[in-house]
Length: 159
Image 1 (cartoon, rainbow, N blue to C red):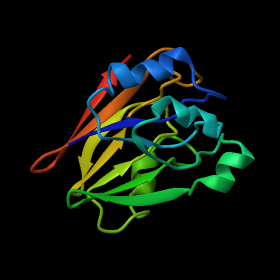
Image 2 (image 1 turned 90 degrees about the horizontal axis):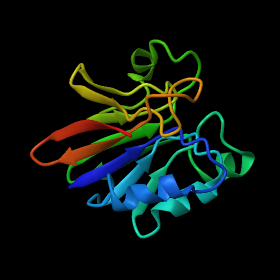
Image 3 (image 1 turned 60 degrees about the vertical axis):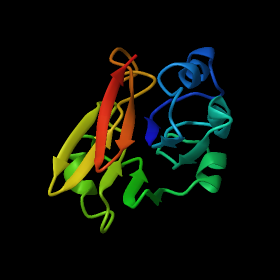
């Protein structure tokens, strides 16, 4: 099973470029995880037809914050994936997130605008980077794919 992972879209509505992901990078994914800072709920319409699990980020509107949780755990094919955005200083964020979830195989997060795909103490810390670009919103745009087979592997896709 493949899962599309995106974060930090920072959009008020879907753009043609965001919608195009469904036909390119996310064409064969079964679901999408959005790790926050979508800004407005309408952004999720870009993924219509796919199951979408999203959490709120620090830059999201009041509507998004009222509708989406700050964190969520999903179980997929026996693997537990924690999804959240992240807060505060982006440096050292994975270390601070380590105690946020218990008994998960993967922690998906955003906020830093930098991709990450490392195993720490047996947990995969996976940040797809930023759809809108690096901090502060320029260059190095990326999304990710998690593949679940006998285990979970992550891949960062540069856009």
